[in-house]
Length: 236
Image (cartoon, rainbow, N blue to C red; front, side, top):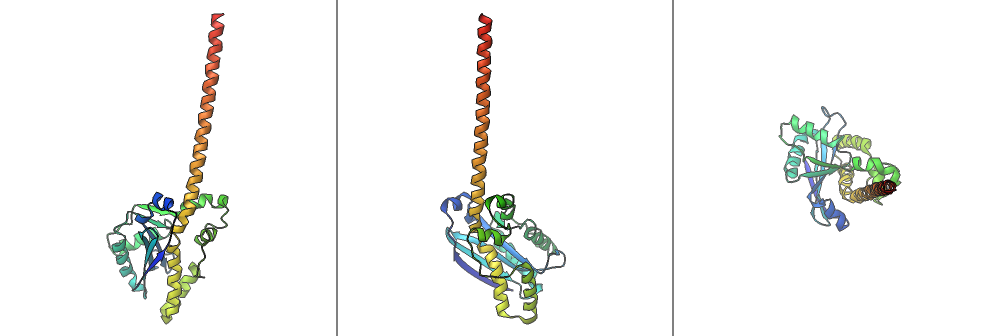
């Protein structure tokens, strides 16, 4: 197993950083040899978290051979135990069930934090309305102005990993790790999109409540006017 650590400066507007308690969240992404949770292996895990506002740390656990999978999961267990919330992009469909299945297989007795902020699930219902061309991670990154260095996708990643296993080429390893690194280092920046969505929903909710109050007020006025007319007619 190969472990690499990084520190990056990722500045988020303070009001967003505080609103979402971003310094309490674990930002996570995994890579696997395929989609079969029974037979495929988790071979790369990137875990990011804020040391303080603006200072972001990422630890990567890379399987130099597929049999390193259990070691990767043990390291993840140790690193994640201090977090109550974790963040992913489409992790409810892939990362979460994959990790849970593997933890159970190795009898590691570990559960992911209960609160899972899946940014894909939050953004998906609104991305077209916002003018985002694609709800993929790269599509949202492009919308926010993020420019990636890596040029591979998931399918290419698996092919390149298989090539790495055959040749153990260091350049291939760097490309593989860069892809997963950028999947995590860009997650905090996407909270700008999440905040825009929530502010828009909050504005619409307030507008809807205001309309309801106006309707109720109008009905109340009409009711009072009808009552006055009825009382005047009784006096006559």
